[in-house]
Length: 360
Image 1 (tube, rainbow, N blue to C red):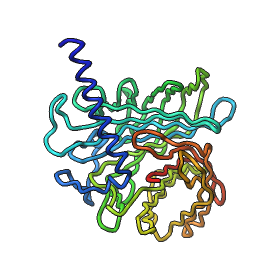
Image 2: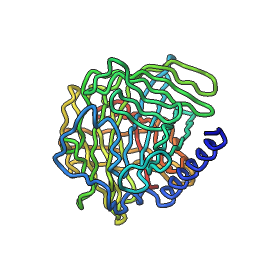
Image 3: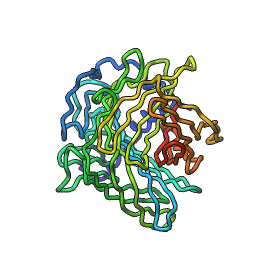
Image 4: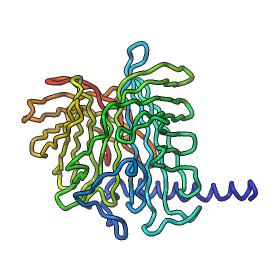
């Protein structure tokens, strides 16, 4: 096949991926509440299988491999990194071969400092090898970005891994180690998103220790810290009256971890949920009625007013903290835009984490 034919096909595939991303952006996050006829359904009682579930689930409409890292450089300055690979099926049914494959891949990468936020995105059509995920040996990639297992990678821990991404004005490369298995979120991996049955399968590896290099504007620095990876897949993760979410992943200085989110509804009500993860890796669900999430300060970003400071309380655990962003301007101005950035918190507990705000 000639190089000209390859480039034309690559161009056509890129146009298709961009069209899907623009359609998703136009719909907003409420588009995730569209009916998913023909796709697989999320139901309680799934038995997770590793390494198999580290890989893709094309019978479901959407899934992601999502990593955030809270780091410090050699001078002690805080920074954060994001690496995300999304898969979305344009239509259900048997997987097409080559350019007929219905999977669209999209990836986001970002690097955040107190005064700097850099981000970029990539797109690929499925079926041509440009992007994808394999469960064993584990590898997730798009172009030259990758999250990759090593020969000694433990399937239960999904570690160690190497991670890399680059944009026009930043790049990073990390090694990720973990000494505990991945943890199932929600009810043994079944994560309910509404009272009407919307849900996802969801597990995390919140115990990564990260080490590597961050390069912004050709100024490389060594970085170390903690990282958290979320794995989630579904066919209809939101209900039709839900517009977006406010989500936090928190690394407590005690070694415990906490995942919290609230899904916002058009009537002004919220659907909150959480999981407390002990330093030993044991999880306990937190009922929505025991979660208090209150915005305390907003920032004007990208023409939007965003709640970037939060007061969080869980009365049953005598837990009360105030979360503040490292950089209030951590807007991901991608085709599917949102706010995502590192935070720190203090109060009854202290530590660092990440905040994600969608649908604003």
